Image (cartoon, rainbow, N blue to C red; front, side):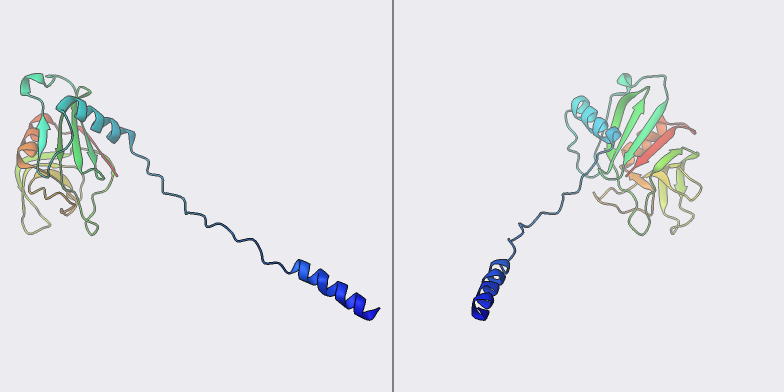
Length: 184
């Protein structure tokens, strides 16, 4: 009887000792990238109005002077991710450009700014007297729009460097107090 009990106990244990079913590997969720609707619509509008947004570093597109509204406020949208700057006058896209913004060590902060001051030719007070043609100051720490080299990657000390001709055109369109939105 003892052998029979031991045998049935061994059989019961054998039935319970099955290996767990393998667990199928689960892929980690893909990060969701949410585009800023302002940038997406600006890119779309630039594509429709200017026949594409395929600019090379240092390029810009602008409507002819006679197609730019005479009256109306100027708003500037700066996309750090796309390295594009969009200029609106009276709600109409009138220009867009590549730009170079701040590096990780000297970032360009996102936010809403107003143009605080303008100067046709300025030299940096912080960085080796560097030239800043068509400077438009955005904050009290020295960040500004200005003309310069646009290599196709972040390369400034926090400023938004535009192609020289675009910096000059933007300087002519804006006034102190115009709104600049920098989005990341």
